[in-house]
Length: 344
Image 1: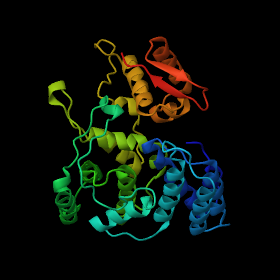
Image 2: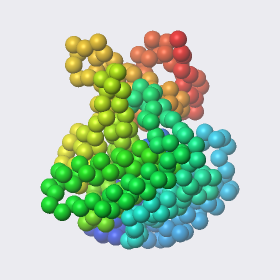
Image 3: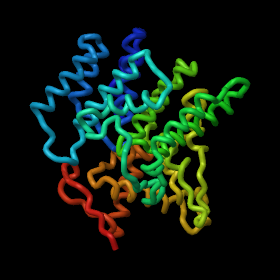
Image 4: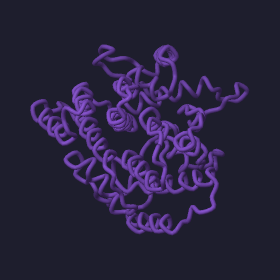
């Protein structure tokens, strides 16, 4: 994500810096679904940081803007990115929180009302989602028939849990376990990861982690989602096991200010750092770039670079190789065109 708010983060005015952190997190979290807010939102977010307009005024201006400039296609989700960013900024600015299923449902409702018909409602059908990190396989989510009971049970167990006497590492491991289970239930049809991230930030504050480094959610939101995926997927026939190690790395950086490497490509189920295996690291990187293009045929080289934490020149080389191998073809211009995936 461009450093739109760095000028405020470097200032000595705490109020402006705090607002800038909130906005950076709110906008960065849109990347979990490959969304990018508009320049208009960036502009009015800065006005909010300056104190010229309130968050309510921000939301009103966005609503008015999209009434006058409606999106032309269902694939254009800029309106969603703008509105949800503003709502996240509002929720993160509030000093209120209750650890309960109702709070979790409320966060989803506030984020997505007017965007999803099911905002704040528990899904009533089963779902699957292809994941690039799983090479297009899906995590097995909770059954619609047992959702409410499973959801409430997890909250009940966490409420009973005592953190007394635990080391910092044990605390982080437990939080990773709880939040990965909560996400795996996948209470909603869409918007689970953004809801889970906001709930986690608020819960961590309640637990006493007042100075959580939320820049990680801004800069590594897609890593956070992929870490949740890997914590809930296994295929023993292929030697793939569920692992919370990636989520623990993220939380250790978040809470303990550690500096663990957070690279999305390392979470891919085919990743290996050894060149002696059948599938080399280079092959895996090609696969991950290809998977991203298959998942979103309008994704740009810049966006792939941001997601994989890979240099733009490397991404362009991978794209060229995919084109040379006849796997993808560019239709239209670099700016407004799209990728055609050629299945053989």
